[in-house]
Each structure stands twice: as C-alpha cells, then as structure tokens.
Image 1 (cartoon, each protein chain N blue to C red):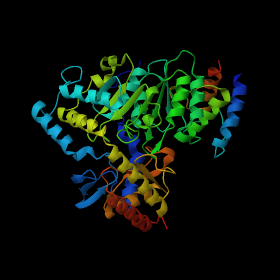
Image 2 (spheres, chains in turn orange, brown; image 1 turned 180 degrees about the vertical axis):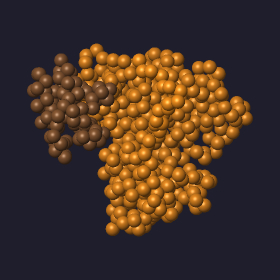
Image 3 (cartoon, rainbow over the protein chains, first blue to last red; image 1 turned 90 degrees about the horizontal axis):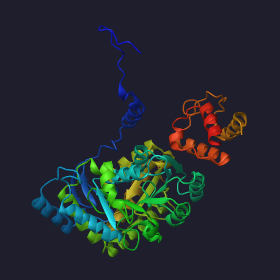
Image 4 (cartoon, rainbow over the protein chains, first blue to last red; image 1 turned 60 degrees about the vertical axis):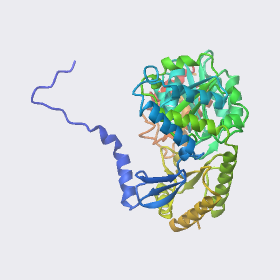
Length: 412
Length: 79
C-alpha cells in the first residue's frame, strides 16, 4: 500500500480539462479567421415557424427540424395556455411518484392512437427515450447490432447498458446479416435502426433490414425522430411507408421535431411493455414534462393525424429545394430527396463555416454540422424544411444559396 | 489456428490500412502508431471479422490497444 503524503508535500495538479485542448485550439483557429461563431447564434425573436430575428435581422429558418410547423399552431398554443392555468408550471416529480398528471396519460393515449399501437411511454426528451429503452432492454450477455451512423443518444444508450455492442456499415444489409449470423446461439439480440439518418437525410431500407433481423430472431427498435408526422400515409414514419411497421418491436420518437415542443417516447405492442415504467432509470429518476408541454404535444399529435395536405406541401418543398441546389452546382447528401432534410456537402470546415456565415448575412439560417457528429468526417450545411415554408420562400432560399456559394467560391 | 498463423493472417489484412508502412510488432498501437481513426477501425475490424468469421464487439475492442493484444484476442475468439 502507498504511504500517505507528508503534511508538507503536495502532488502536481492535473487539469481535467487538458483533454479538450485540441478542440479548444481548433475552435480558436476557426474564429481567428474572423468568422461568426456558428455555435453561438441567438434567436432574438421568433416570428413564425419559418422566420426569426437573429442579430437584428429577419432570417428564414432552414435548420430547425420544425417539419410540420406546429410551434405556432393556434390550437396547440391554446392547449398549452389552458394547461398552465389548470395544472401549473411544472410537476416537480418523477412519472412514478407525483409526476403523472392527466395530461401525461392523454398524450400517451394520443401516441397509441397515432401509431395504432398498444403501449406508449413518454420521456422528458428524445435523447432519454433512446438512452432509457436501449440500456434497459439489452442487458448482460445480449447483443446490440446497430448502424455505425446512429445518433449519439443510441450510442449513449449502448454505452450505459451491459450488452455487447456490434456496429455495422451504414445501411449495409449484408454487413448487418453477417454480424447477426455470428452471434452465439441463444443470446438476446436487438437491432437498432433509424428511419431517416439526420446528417445526410437518407432513409434506411427498413423492409429488407427488418426481414433479415427477424430471420435471426432479433427484436427491432427503429428511431423515427426525423420522419414522424410526414413520412408514411399516416405520418408514422419510414417503417409505415415501407409497409413493415407491424414488424417493428419498438418505435422511438420525439416531440421536438414535427410535434413542435420537447419530449421523447417509445411505442410498442410488446405485451409486457408496461414493466418499463418501473425498470427504466432515465424514465424513473428524472422529473416529468411540464403540463403545458404534454398538452401542446397531445394537441399537436392529434392534429398531425389529419395533416395530409401539409405532408404533400412539405414533400413538394423538399423536391424543389433539392433540384434547385443541385442545378446550382452544389453537392448534396442524397441523389434524390428522401426526407425533409437536404444536406449540402462542404469541401472543408473552413469554407463550410464561411458559407454558413455568408448565408446568415443573406438572411438564412441552416445547421453547420462537422466531425465528429458527421459521417466520414464531412462538413455539412444541413437544411431542414418546414411545411410552412411557402413556395416563394423556397425560391428565395435557392437564390441565397447561389449568391453565397459564388461569393465563398464553392460553386462556379 | 495457433497464434503464429493468426498473426500472419492479421498482418496481411493490416497492410492496406497501414498507409505509412509502420513496422508492425506486438507493441504497435493502433491509435498512436498507426493513427487509425474511428472509420478505419470499423473497416479494419470488419475485415478481421470476415476473415476469421468472428465478432469483436465494441466492448472487446475497447480492451485492444496494440497489435499483440489483437492477435491474442482473435486467437482466443476462434476457440
């Protein structure tokens, strides 16, 4: 055993922050070029789902995931105000103690109705839904087989649990099958997929992948965060669109995109699903969503069931923007528009940041996505369209991209 | 398959990933010496898994820092 230090001796101080030095340096170098900090934008005023004031200037929003534009829906706002009056500002408690109000049960029922499934469980964020469900259902000795481009919340759910984690190449059915085939017989298997991958806006061949997963006796979890509300005849997501939703054991989703507020959920037909409420720690050991949030979510979800016209308009926007940017000479993440995300591939981080800033000066906000969040270390300008973007706004956006792209030297 | 034969087959697989032609010994580290990033690791692990028809889970990969440790792990995984 090591001796205690003498009273007059101290060991050298180790700064736990030194591990962040490379990132601090990278950020300093980028900002030293004079570019506006792409991660420090403040929305001073929000005028509508598609327009806000940033740096004193009216800016078209093209990076909010507010796909269905529900954030300013009058019925949604009214439901939130009413819940504030009737139930107060917060629950101050866990769902399993004092944090389940009538509104939480109502929004879970709305989800069951929306997906036509037996069970729904609402979490405080989408991140926690993935974290909680994945870490809880896949335990020691089980295997999680997942796409390498999975969202951080999926990876963190894997890391928090005790299962063996086996990734495969993005959307590669054969690579997935090989891994499933090699898992020891009798082990529990969970295949984790996403409907839409948010970085490039591409979709998964869920029908084929789920068929393979089922052949090897795996359970399947699909994260439909970026498809809820507008992909599929009823807006249930890519699995519905491809006709395989009945083969999905767990659908994970969020209220922070098409639904227009915050929160996450899992829906399932598993007969024992309700036990999750007692064993899933990210559900139990955190406060539940405020009454106003669940009331807005509930109203929004019920309206999304009947939003066929908005879905059609959003798809139209996606097709027009994709074609417009492509014709202008930009390199895009997908050959054809597959979702409401259009990803514009930048040659490097420096020019990506310059382009982002040039767009902001034009009056357009998009997401700058950079490694390590991006696949293949790409720098992306990620655009997410809204059903409330007018055809006119989409044309304006194409014009802004073209001018900025020429100014920065990304297109000829 | 014994350790020596396993090592020879892994050595052949590592070649296309060893861009700087670093001399490989049991002590060679994947991150520090071969400068593998996460994408390279994924492709390299997939190549080994296919060659030996095994799974090296992320949990197991976390324990493997050097070439020697990889050869030991693959030898063991073949049973």
